[in-house]
Image 1: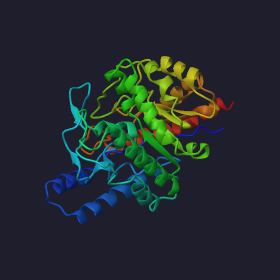
Image 2: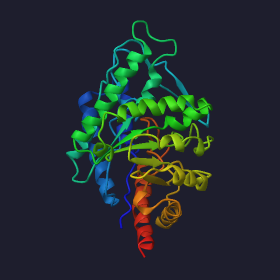
Image 3: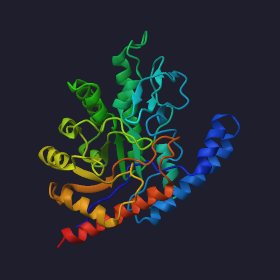
Image 4: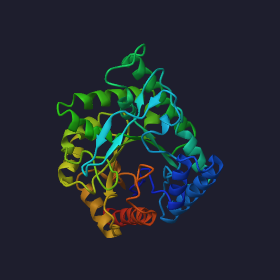
Length: 354
């Protein structure tokens, strides 16, 4: 018996890379120097992943501006004054705003995947942003000559292309980051917005065969930025039934930091469908204390009380420091937590296979 365990995506960038990024943004560093330091950070990230014993690795999003906006970097039809997302501690993140059509990605995620694959022999997982998150860049008052329906058609095509490129490049798994799912319930308690998000993402997933969907997953959490969240106050039971309607086979669900984890696990047990696997979050990425393997073990055993072993996996609650300027978590802490997840999952296996 083996319980699969996978990371989510982001790893805190080393201080050298963060400093150089600031210099580059200010026009005081060359793109060649940035490329060199970024490659060093990627190489170190993969080496340290391997040292944890993790069976699956990621690029740590070392060269992405953020998990959410990588397709938009450098587009000429983007303005900075888009939708604002407020976190519980009061800080905000602002999305870009689309100013004209047509919409196309500037960057596809397979370029990050291929760069990582060249530096490791382990299976590499690739995170991509959801179509529903990118749908928020379309302005509420519309764009003359480019109706929302045309934008959504373009968005669905581009999001499907993003996933397909990663599948064709040999990604172990392609993970759709859907952190706006819980936020949608907060913004619209009627759940109309959530239903629109689910339908839009399913339009993307309709491009893939059942066999391909076995390599596609969806990640959900209440946001995780600067040790704060944007929607942890929303009852998971308001999201999870709809989440599992997505046409994917793998779901990565934040649970370690969840105050009502039993309630969430019960909802997952009621609504999980045959063939779906739930990777439960057993690492609280917002807590600076590194969990012991025994603490992780106990979280896995608790989840096994609700989910059958053939539908159970483990993961981290979220990525570590998913935005370029988030320095709330250090690299040593992140990799220490990942090591504990790997070891704790193995400890749980030993008990469950008795």
